[in-house]
Image (cartoon, rainbow, N blue to C red; front, top):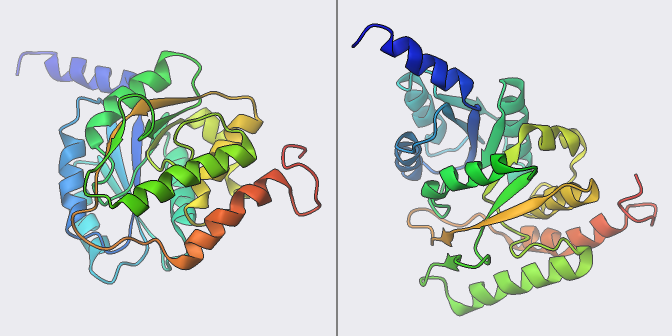
Amino acid sequence: MPAGKGTREQNMVEASPKVVVVVPTYNERENLPVLAGHLAELPVPNLHLLVVDDNSPDGTGELADKLAAGSGGTVGVLHRTEKDGLGRAYLAGMARALDEGADVVVQMDADLSHPASAIPEMVRALLADDTAVVLGSRYAPGGSIAAEWPWHRKALSAWANFYVNAILGLGVRDATAGFKAWRASTLRAIDLPTVRSSGYSFQVEMNHRVIQRGLTISEVPIRFEERVVGASKMSVGVQVESALAPWKLRFNRDGEPAGRD
């Protein structure tokens, strides 16, 4: 290696924003190494992966530890002792990422439905102006959903977005998106420890908090793929929580508008 080249490359990494991809896992042993490989190939300097495993019985946590051991410090693992909702896992991972100096936090699923290839554009869009969070959007112009999705799932997804926007007026095309790039300052501003939602409604509550504080949400189109391996974690209870959440966000427990806090 030419003299000084290693130092120049190290300085470039140190000067780049630290991007931490937070990925909750529960029984994702087959998908996780594939996702880790996709992330490692991205042209994003100073990119890190933080796996948040909820004590997966299939050994996902142990596999994550092995990936971390061989990563040279770019992969971390947060082990949780119980499975208490996607939102709780994301919040724990986001808090850890902030504590470890993240400048940008990307949240994405482990099931390969979110295209890792979109992350460079999402990070660029986030840092280009005063955007607070960028959504990987299925419904922005150019976005799409896998053809394998049955019509009733597509209809439910479209209805959920209409429903949420009608109640909360978020003004975004994909209000229920789970693929997002956050500024660290945004996550601090929306007060993570007080977020109440635990299931998929977590996505809506986080967007609502951004809008409440007068911050900007942008959208980057993605193609949302169908899960190849494993089973969906969407239960009837989660669907009920998701349906009630917009009303709870609009009116707090005292009956006052949620924005008046």
